[in-house]
Structures are given as C-alpha cells and as structure tokens.
Image (cartoon, rainbow, N blue to C red; front, side, top):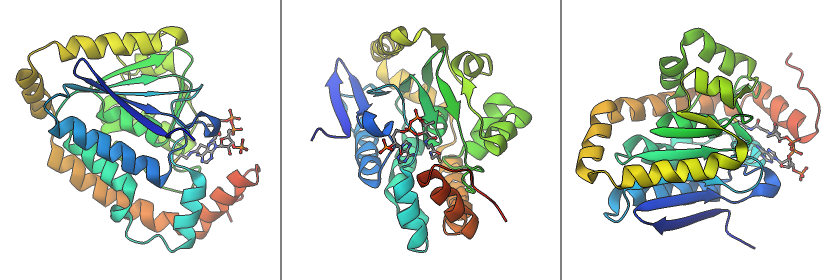
Length: 255
Ligand code: COA
C-alpha cells in the first residue's frame, strides 16, 4: 500500500502530498503525525527553503477522518492537545519558512484552516472550501477563529463557520484567501512555480519577513484555547449525533 503522505525535496522545495484519494484525503492520526514531521523538517532542515502542500486525486482533503473523530469522542476526548493533529498545528504555528498550497477540489475543515498558515495559496477556480465545524457540532481550530475573520471579515467568517457551506475558488480568491484562482489543470504547476520563485529568494530575508508578519506564540496559545472548546464538543452527544449521521449518510437531528 502506498504511503498516505508523501514527501519529496527538490530544488529547496519540500513537497508534501496528501495521498489517500479514495477517502478524499481525509486525514487520519497517522497522517497528522507525518504532516507534523514534514512541517518540522521544513523548519529545521537547511536544505528546505519552501514547504509546498498538494494532494493526489480530486480533492485537497475532506478534513479530519470522521472515524477518528468517533473513536476519540467515544474514548471521552482525552487531552486534545496531545493528539497528533496538535503536533501538526504546533508545527504550522512555528513554521518560519514559507508555505505554499495547491488546492483542487474539496478543502474541508483543516483543509481550509491550514491554508490560513500558508503564505501563498493557489486554488482551482472550481475548488470548494468549507469549514463545517458547527455542522459537526465542533468548534473552529488551527487559530482560524482569529485568522479567518482577519482575512475575510467577521460576517463572512461567521457564515463559513456557522453554515458550513462551501465557497468556490473564485470567491475564495475574491475574499483574500488565495493569491491565485486558476483552471484546475493549472493549479499544481502554478503553485510549483511560485514555490520555486520563493526558493530562489534570499532565504534569511524571506524567513525574517515571515517571522515579522506573524505572532507565533499568540497563534499557538489560541490553538490550545480552541482545542479546549473543540475537545469538549467532541465527546458531546450533539457531536456524536453529527458523526453518526455522516457515517449513516443521513442528516443530523439536534435535540
Ligand atoms: N472521514 C472519513 N472518511 C471520509 C471523509 C472523512 N472526513 N470524507 C470522505 N470520506 C470517505 C467517504 O466515507 C467515502 O468512503 P466510502 O467510499 O468507503 O463510502 C469516500 O471518502 C468518498 O467520499 P464521498 O462522500 O462518497 O465523496 P463525495 O464526493 O460525495 O463527497 C465530501 C465529498 C468531501 C463533500 C464528503 O465526503 C464529505 O462531506 N466528507 C466529510 C467532510 C467533513 O465533514 N470533514 C470533517 C471536517 S471538520
């Protein structure tokens, strides 16, 4: 079986590919661990100048694997900040080298919120980005409760969170979530070109520029705060109803 997360270093660009297309690249605990490792490598390995996230198949990612949500929810939630997803979020918050994303198809949940930590985002015009945390009776994560309203404004961010309906790539671009919206067959090439351009710039200058633009400690503190809300929701009856409804392919009924 091929690995669900692939990495390749080429010309200073560390490309990380989500490779579980049969499940729309839904991210399991093991995949978060691999994403955390790759993101930490990007920060610490001098050979890496740019991190590029992309995906195989027709979707960027369907977000967190819902079977994992059910398992964690049924086990009582545990200390959510110990989970592999948090290792990935911590690595993203602390990444001080540029990250680029190439997004085709669906980008759900963390598939959208991780883009808020990327410095350049290329989306397909017909990509569909959504953060249906409330539909799953959960709460925003990845510091998106701060970063999404900062990028798109409060009302748009609230709509994205509370209604959970997707916005397409053109709208994501118009709202400032993406640098480029291009035809789907040009997404990977456009993102690869941008990553190569950044990799050719003076690396210390690029790194200092990114550091000055972000408050890492604030982001990480907020991620942990959000994690408490997310964790307590995860083991709630309303979340379990939402997860079961997904697996049973029906609409949830909340009280
Ligand atoms: N977790 C686990 N499995 C998932 C998944 C997820 N988040 N998203 C999709 N899959 C699986 C489906 O169960 C299905 O598996 P099966 O073929 O064994 O039945 C397979 O991936 C294909 O998904 P399907 O729903 O048939 O594709 P679609 O094109 O009709 O819809 C999505 C794609 C992304 C819109 C839909 O799968 C979806 O809504 N997924 C859940 C997204 C979500 O809420 N994620 C959590 C965010 S916090």
